[in-house]
Length: 404
Image (cartoon, rainbow, N blue to C red; front, side, top):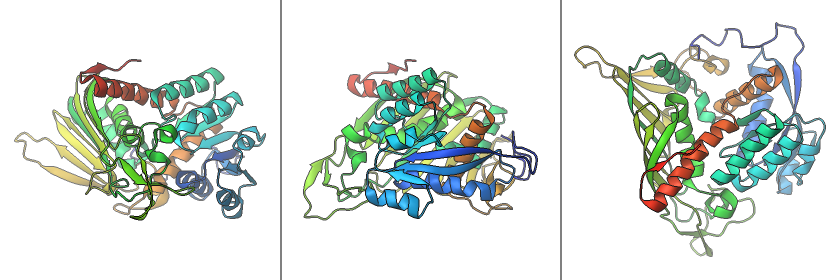
């Protein structure tokens, strides 16, 4: 990643005044992230002047009629339906964005790929490792471009950490610590939405949280080759949800309870192909951290750490001869990647949906320019292979190899 300011030429961008590629977009699943992607696509023309494409919101689908009306009434989609097939069959849709519940991912990906659409799917691209394999195979077989919603990769300071590691500025990397602690499931009265159900979400904290943590590690350090781990469900019953309830909804003490059927917590030790050792821990029921998606990387010449709760700060340690330099804080600013697209200067913050906008810009740029995009379904598959090894380890109580 370049640390040039946002005024630098955009890779593949046309000269000023050149005609841009139109990309017709369809969105399947119009909850929180479906709407975030739609807002981001609407924002792109106002932010990226030298873009190579113009996104157009063509078709949207959601199982709830109220969201269908919202898609056309508030987001200006040309068409909307409760039938997801209408999005994939629409001849004006070139790229499909999937933000439906996890266990629906593979069916939607397979249909979109078979129809020849570029397909961007929110992680984990399937509720189980086996489904992720199917999704990756479908995209590969159809020869379509794929993208996956590992949006934290696109934080400008995360990209800077990647650059520091790749350039050897931290020396030989010996240790990695990854974690994602979110309190969305800490309240026992939090409703039993689809995310807590094995038949709708697939696995729980491993798919929802650990997928992000491991993907960041893969990007920064490379593949994991073996793991030893454990799983637990701490809140085993929750209030029954209403239609369209999110995992942030709250029930009442008198509401009937239904069982939670996937895991709240996971932890693992691991070994990277490079020889580095790592630890990972994720929880949706831990009390304290609100959204602590974080990593610490330790090398022989320095260390670096980042935490989503402080998105615009990076902790950096550069070892001196007497080992006494201590950590310094690097503030985000327009010298880091796309940060300056949103706000100039240094120390002026960007936010979560700005990361979604960056990933949507990068994905659509790849579609328009006919080039490869990462992270795609191959990166989702790399995570799924780690997840499969973790699930085996939780059952066996032993170290398990990551199988490709």
